[in-house]
Length: 211
Length: 204
Image 1 (cartoon, helix red, strand yellow):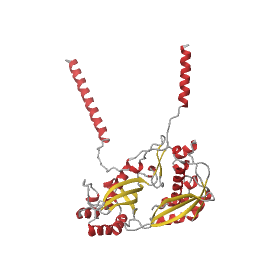
Image 2 (cartoon, rainbow over the protein chains, first blue to last red):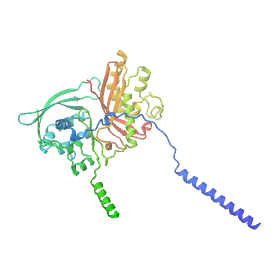
Image 3 (tube, rainbow over the protein chains, first blue to last red):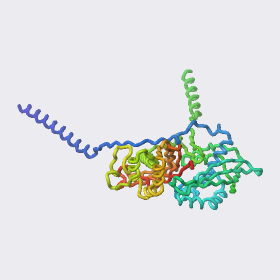
């Protein structure tokens, strides 16, 4: 009878212990209990960010490479977006700027003197300016003659406002070495550090004149 | 003899493996005008899209659609263009309806909405009263101005290209938007709101 009682007491203690374990577990869980709230958002369609058929830089004709590099350079030279931080960052000419990586100091200095003040002024007024290269030819002296068109919207949000359109010429003296992608470790490191993809192209502007 | 042959084979395989190069291209995406160059992929540069990026993108998608939509129904237009109390239910609770009251006002600040009322709304009102024009957003592309990394938990600067179908044909806009963060004032959008919005008509 005594043994039976001991077994019963032992069983009771086991059940009590399991019960306590369950409750302590529940208290522990209550502290970390989360409810899930589901939100649905409209997805964004981003076809512009999707690339089409990739083409290797080695397979692209040099003229085509030259044209897109010049377009990019001229665009960097003149574009304006309604963001003063963007204008300030560009005029600081940090080491990642195209005007530092793909142009000589004289080009950057001319830009700072002649174009940067206007870019700062326009961006402070929330203006927007697009750049389009309409023609690239070679002069007798070997300079590249780049004809460009600037469209400037001076007033944002005005549906009826028309942009100011101006045309001009840039005379570029570019390095004569064949345009290729630098395939060095240094170039790869630059890309991974967030440099502009243009900086890995062997393309350098030595001098610029604006008309 | 067999062991010797096996060792030679293993050495050969090791040399072959060492000289094998895996291709890891840099993919650079260039837009139509050649103005925007973006590195879209490299094996060591995998871009992760965080939740705050998707939230801001979604807010801009809805906001831009609301900004450029003119309905065929005056009641819907009034609801879309209306100004509400920021502490009221319209700006604090999700209605679940496709056209909710004050949807532009509730997702932006007073300065942007004032600009909308003064500059955009009079033109929209004329379009509606003159010929009952209807604007429907057909295409919309949203991307950060700089890079994915430039978008943070507290907002970012975005570029949006929009194509709109109107009675007279398609019209196109390029927009720039700054997203700000204020969890108290904008609970409906988890704290994100449009703090600056600039639009430029590209086909003019």
